[in-house]
Image (cartoon, rainbow, N blue to C red; front, side, top):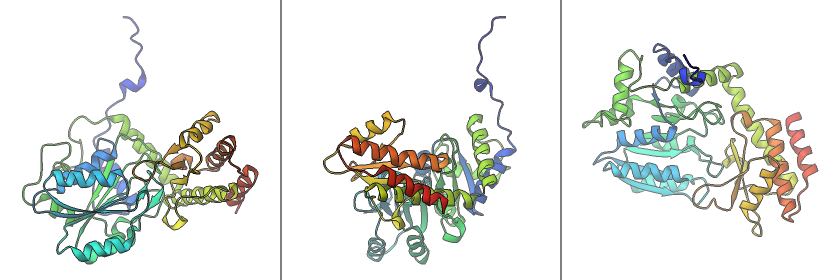
Length: 364
């Protein structure tokens, strides 16, 4: 018999059915949530759309906070299902102002759902989640939070904050796979989802996954991809071994060291620290320079710097310190490469001072 040259990755054994429930419980622990945990066999944008599809129907009213393309999409998905949606659109590339949320709530006689993104990897900003959720709780509003870019990088206590639907993906701060995601769903959210004939028989149906929760939480619907679940298990092993508090602290240090390095470099940052994500630091490109040329110059040094995404972000560059990149070596190489790119373009930058500032941040 000829050698078919099988790659071991093609012959991965099935993920043990009894371990799905264990995975869900471990994710619940990281989220600090006693709510139902649903596993979605796709990247987190699918889980976000599933939440919108499962909630949306004629008669539902929603307040949707838009600080990136993800917020725009969520509003579109709700409208497609017949919901009445009011968007709060923040200044391009900036976090939403709490005053705008208060004004929108005061102007609406009834709101069923409030949706927002916690941290934005598109522009490196952080929305004022606790304040917004406090307003929503006072109004008895079901909340949907995209926590994909914040879990592990920022404090997130689902039960304490009162988040009804939290959507996560393990590919960012948790350093896991991109092809699987999860949701935490509260009883209040289930009441809203399951009333009036919830959508069913769809990969986007949370009601179908509720059947999984109410059963024995063994085999998931469809044909699961075992590699993704084994990878998720390994990522959770790492997070639990390091300790979630230490993971969050590591990202906070990477963010503060990056900001210190940029300040010493002579480069401004996009938003103040209190409004910034710990996973990505955004810098505005000097008006005389082209973002693409700086990205290319950094690339020649083997460092990936990326452009901002969405309205108002075209003039931003992002320094990524997410997951395993939240470490001294990556922070240093990001800032040094950015400084070298600025120098190459004829813009002054103090690379030595930046390096010392980053080292000092990690020594303290």
